[in-house]
Image 1 (cartoon, helix red, strand yellow):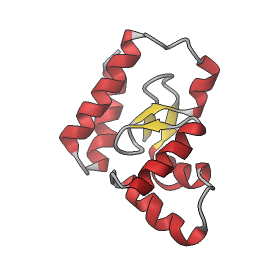
Image 2 (cartoon, one colour):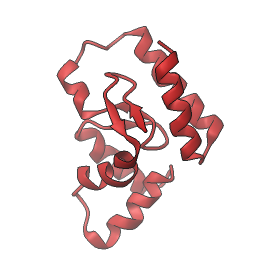
Image 3 (tube, one colour):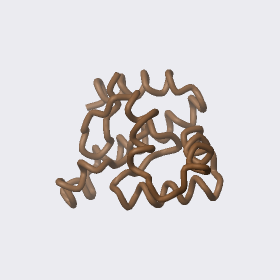
Image 4 (cartoon, helix red, strand yellow):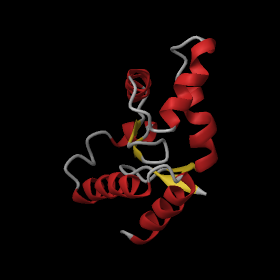
Length: 123
């Protein structure tokens, strides 16, 4: 199932986001600690390690909510740089994603399904 970027609406496959995107995007750590760090990040952990990962991913164009399923900005947004600033629809999409994450907690399947429904019907 696809999940969409809140800013540019680029579709991203949920499997790719959960199992490949973070691994591909972040090569700034050694292999011995990467597995633990990325697992903490994927689970929404608020550790300093996940903060380091978030900062590095932001440099590569990724901005997430609590989980990687809640894509607030993606590398494709760079081609639209500045066009979506101040756009009320984009602000609303981002706020909805953050609220849905707060409501559903660790239920990634429910989050994926709900985000898909929101993106399909919220326009």
